[in-house]
Length: 310
Image 1 (tube, rainbow, N blue to C red):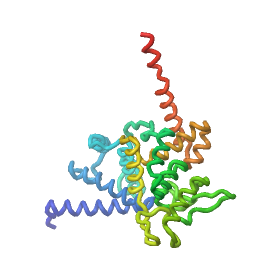
Image 2 (image 1 turned 45 degrees about the vertical axis):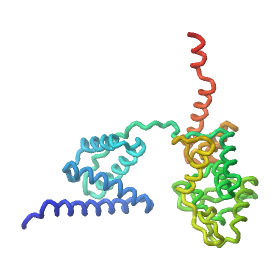
Image 3 (image 1 turned 90 degrees about the horizontal axis):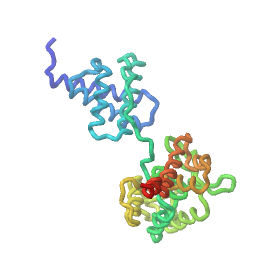
Image 4 (image 1 turned 90 degrees about the vertical axis):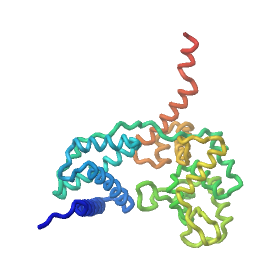
């Protein structure tokens, strides 16, 4: 039988790898959105192997180490490199379990990751100034207030519907679909003054259809387009710039970090903070204590004392 031309062989191999990536993505227990992400990460890995002239059956641990270095050299953040490697590990675990290829990824190590907080909190005066920016915009004022006073994530705000506001044991709450959850099993407490900002905004929208999003991009009665996470991040970033904060370390997610940090500063109760921020693991909550330590260090640096001694 006559061999296929090299270009045709490459096309055939690429199609086989695409099918393999799809089979892997649907063969492990992850969401549909994660399936697409895992498939994309694998395709990048397969493209790299193609560029260096390797097939899957010829890959050794040395090639995986070289790929890790390639990812680092490409400018990816250490957290992104770690994620890419985790997908590759899962892939090889799956191929070994499926008796396709042995798992050669067991000894590959992640690059060093700095565990210090990547987002900085606002001070209380800065938080109040940010709210003041939007005092004449009922929707954006309600969003900023909700983020600061409950620590919600942007994605949780976009998923919220009007009907998700309810009561638990006499307290008004907003039921939310938390990170990694499929249903709205989490909640945040809406204090009277926080709920008032939402109520004022909803009154401005007028009659609402069942299942209406809590926040709309186009508040034209019943014709409401759900506000996107991109729009919420934009609202936060513009507000930050208006109060003089134009720093990539400060984002809309900084408002969640602000909520956790200021709550810990006010109470010193790490378990209260964990529950309020809805963290599964206290180690995540401890990032807020590190932020306070940094702030205290800057307020009273030892270097100031040393400068008076020498």
